[in-house]
Image (cartoon, rainbow, N blue to C red; front, side, top):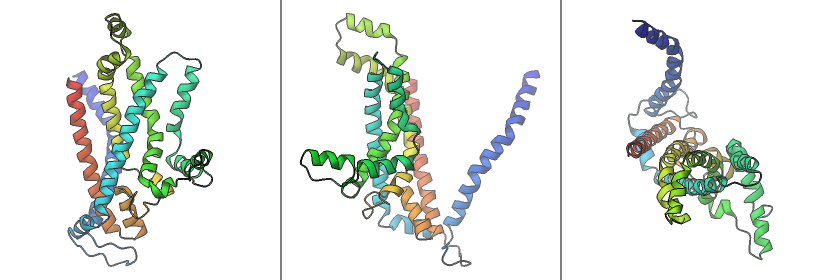
Length: 290
């Protein structure tokens, strides 16, 4: 009885926070779904007729939708590839004894604490600017013409910026997992004649697989909604070369003042994000069971 009473008291104490969190999520989602069934344009106030699934049909037939979806998947895949592979390599490097190891680790993790807008502006003006940027200066040193990253390779540029921000997160998780590896296994493998490459592929990499799946899941959820980096660097251009689903919803809602169409795009983006999250959760569940 005492246990049941304590559980009931615990549920009662956390219920206000749970209810507030539920309302904080469900009210905006409910309003978005409601607006997605209306012809709601801010330039035509007072005229908001019910249109059913017309906004969804128009959004799917929009010429920008499929390129935006492809750019979204390419952006997520490119960042995951760079951060996962780079995170493993950096974790291996930081796990080695070196002078000033603590300072090096802080410097490696530092980019994760920079605001996305600030880091995007730094990359845009200090690195990728073809006239005054560092990459343009290096090209001049080697006698090469400057390369305008944001106009000639816009999506690749955004992948680099976002990967630079998320690489410390992946490194930190993978380094923690690497340090939990029993050193006796590595010593036994070395005594049996296994070289560094064999020890990495047969002992370290399988041990890091669970941490890597967690990194992939968490990053994917956030990478599906990348927006600030695109807004301050390319504005989705040139054309729609760097437009993802999030920026497409923004352009429909706030640049074209079509709240109904933008809401339909937001609902579609939420559904796609949940599909990806469920798939990754199942993948992680299978990985944890093995």
